[in-house]
Length: 77
Image (cartoon, rainbow, N blue to C red; front, side):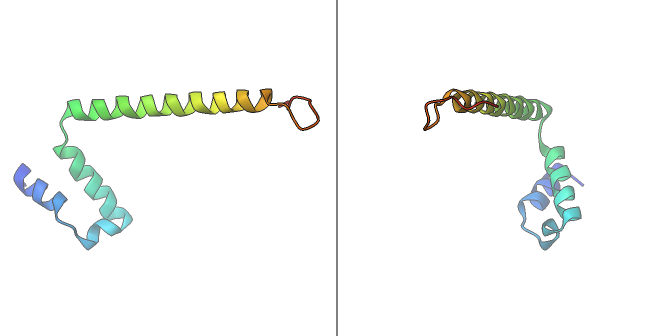
């Protein structure tokens, strides 16, 4: 199968993509068309997102533990 045929197959909506096996195949086909550099950029973006989410969780836990309760005491975890 040529790259042109793969691109057409991936862009054409098909009922097969709605099953778990079809979705996996579709993902694999898209991966074949994606250049290695683009895959690396995607992984770097995903890592940045994960680190930002982790930092946000830490900040919210810290802010929550430092917020005074209605009785004037701090929340403790």
